[in-house]
Image (tube, rainbow, N blue to C red; front, side, top):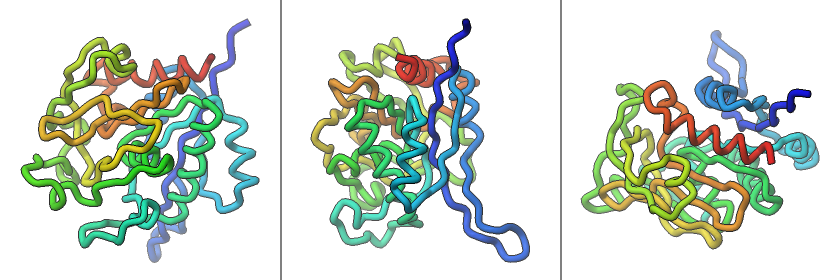
Length: 244
């Protein structure tokens, strides 16, 4: 008998109503679904829910969780006043994803966290963020290559710790990545380790030693799967963990 594909949850973002055009919607970029399906998973899009019993029912269906990119995390979630360059926030999405991230970490559910996702993971466990790296970090290079640029544009290299899970997945300690963010990890949460950096020292990846699979990436591998096989290998490794 063929094994059933693991069910992986991908959280949605909220699209507010547009006058005369569309009602309010939940949705997510197709690229996350495409990379997950290619890795052998069955994706389930998770709406933003205020009822924790309903959210828990969905979480219990999952073999793994993907936290995707999107809006800024509200600085109130990590005890900072809003910076003047803090952009759009979504309290409902923060509440949904922080809850899911904590459950996944507490219960050993394989977790892949991308861009906003790595930031949510860090905040969920007690870390903090740079609200705008361009203005808060001296000598930092440009990281927010959006909008107006292809999402698969390779913007800078990253250096990966050689003894990390990520280096084992990639088969290398250096690679070039896309860069679509203006926030980044600041204080690293207990239980997480920084395992990749851009040339200017910005944290580009986190892992949780001892967890079955908890990996956060600041770049967007889902946009690179057609250009670099190592990007798909990240999703393959996550889905393989979901099958355990």
